[in-house]
Image 1: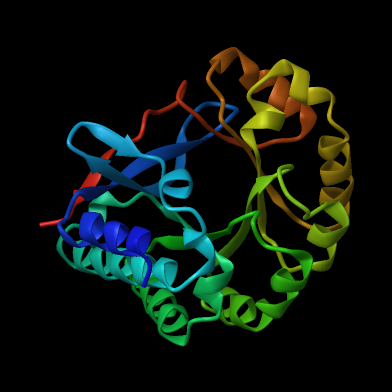
Image 2 (image 1 turned 90 degrees about the vertical axis):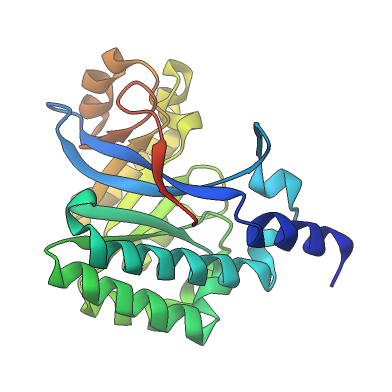
Length: 243
């Protein structure tokens, strides 16, 4: 294992991290619809940018281990304090998660436990997926959907996944990236119209990410989005700290 891997595990295993939660709201009235669970790593008072500080983390053996520990932590917290979870709980996953049998089984068990507590797991597939990797994981996705999991595409507009790929894959939700939704300049992007065309043919939940001005809500609704996430609605707050 490389030195940077050792550095990561030293930070992670010493407990210098916590899980934060950020609400996702209905754009129409800003009522809470769900919340995303976010991992925050830190060194003293300094937050570590996961991808920049640990390059390649999403594509090697480290990420499934992180996901497994997060799932275990969420499962224990669900046993103790289920009311602290919003009705829909968003969790980000990557290609290596879907190729790891242990991670898939842990996620399936978590989905079942959420359902038993009248809550729904939302798995956000990171836009680092290639089209080939996306279709390689359709078996796991089908299993999750049969358990009532919402399958989402994260950061639409930043990678290779286009509207035609969304149309061909069993996505339930698409979260458009901050670069498309958080700035007025991004509203002219053809990604929006392509996505809305697909949403006319298949039922999709559409979520705008990275909103920092609440006045954008009406315009994003006019574009076709029902839900939003961003600092103007809710700042990420500490949810679970590792004991």
